[in-house]
Length: 144
Image (cartoon, rainbow, N blue to C red; front, side):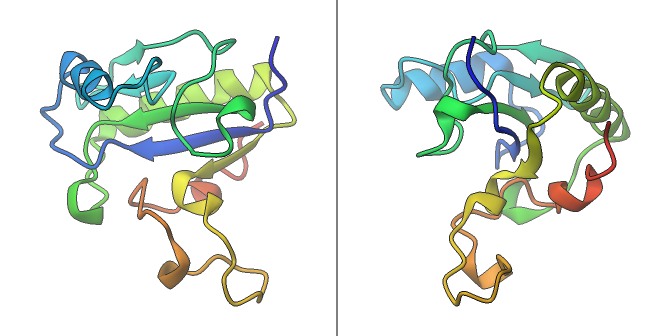
């Protein structure tokens, strides 16, 4: 079993009409052997498991071996356009993952960016990616 230090929240940075098959085709096109996410939540709130959490996905370069990656379809142009159904399902999924990995830090993909100015905060101008288009670290800080 892997040691999980992070649960990373992502957006697909595309349309909310993106299907699981669309995502899987994109990962294949990129030449990835594993999907980018363990789970994806579509606009209707359905949670789709793409990969067992004991396997490594391709969500955050340099951190994948210690991370469970989840995403919601949407987030195009850095806009948080989660549906109410997605918000509910993300919360449910994160609560389940928190129980399984109680020591893991829940944060957005953008929170893995380096603190370029050394002030102890990762600021918007330092984000490698805007993903997941909202502040997941703050929104989910009280999940236990």
